[in-house]
Image 1: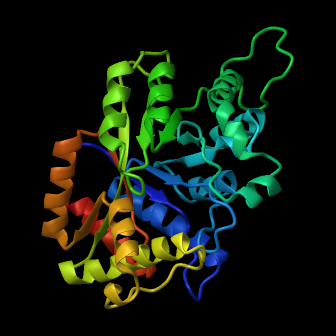
Image 2: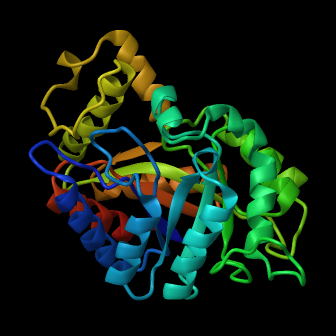
Length: 326
């Protein structure tokens, strides 16, 4: 039975605020730990009214402090927004505070728009230097060499697990070249998933960090007591995708009874393609859907995400998803 993990964006729902979003994230992480999920990751986004996980390392520290065993990490840190040294220091600090529990996933997208990227004092063009930035970061996390001019303090020698994230062949090739675990963003960009997995597994070079390929796939999983209720809960995620594509991202909306009245046919096709890796339904439907997904793609681990408006319903969804493991 493969491991299940959780991806959280600390959603800020209509009528809520960031403080409540953070409390909900800590509460959900505690539930995930209690149930047996392997890791709890938070994603970096900026200038998104409905996503509170912008200061990702800070939130990881809060979630790790609220739990005791589950791995906590970044899924991921958008490296073009940061210097490798700063990332090594931040995650070296987290690793010192919570030994053996911190993961560092790295992405090359800015996680925001161009204006916000400029406000971050870094530039999307620096994504071209992503492989070099990753290599520099790995050096900062390795044991310091005698005479090394710049060291990550803390961070040097921590050797904390580093993952490459991606939604294209670029990340797959880099993860294979460096011998690192790979997480594919199939939960919102599934088009290249099968090809990326094939490239990663075919071209993988063992490293001191990892002896054989290890691939994790993201999947939207919304479970309720009935198929109809799960489909209704899923309209929150569908609405959010549409408003984002319309250029009007906002707070996470409540579910609606008839999604067909909300989107255009073109928007529906776009959302169904982007959210193609989604398993939505009652327990029996989700058990079958997850089993089929695993059998087809053979991931080493699944990372479940669920953008559900009501926190109690979100907790219930992750409980039912765990119970539906095949």
